[in-house]
Length: 179
Image (cartoon, rainbow, N blue to C red; front, side, top):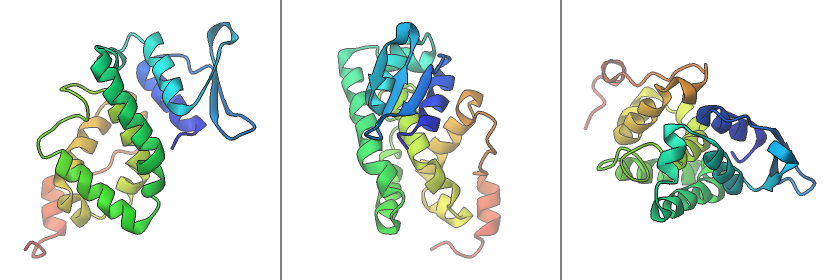
């Protein structure tokens, strides 16, 4: 999750040149940007990208100190818990259930607009969501709505195949399986 490819995707989302992104000798993602300034650590790199970007997502992420703190917490949560947890069968079910419950009353993780927190979590769980069956997507309908909303943005899906979240498709596939 907090790898070179994810940082490059997020830099592209923000419309910022990613610079040279690599893993250092301690396997920590590192970015060398303008003026050979080096920044290490996933959350720190995302903060530096947000400061350089003029995109709506970046501006939403740094609008106030409170929003900045919440975004940073979600990014750290994505790195420390979501990404590793999405690889474990039991933890991933709980993650999906928790996010589904969270998105009952929210459209975004922080505030009322897309932020870096949404991008970090989106990329952290994207492989897990790709592996869901249509019935699973229906069982996590709120999470599916959030994920589908984000993937509709070209700067986020970046040419990757779009996942099908059409409820008619889900309903036809899962006919007779509702409780």
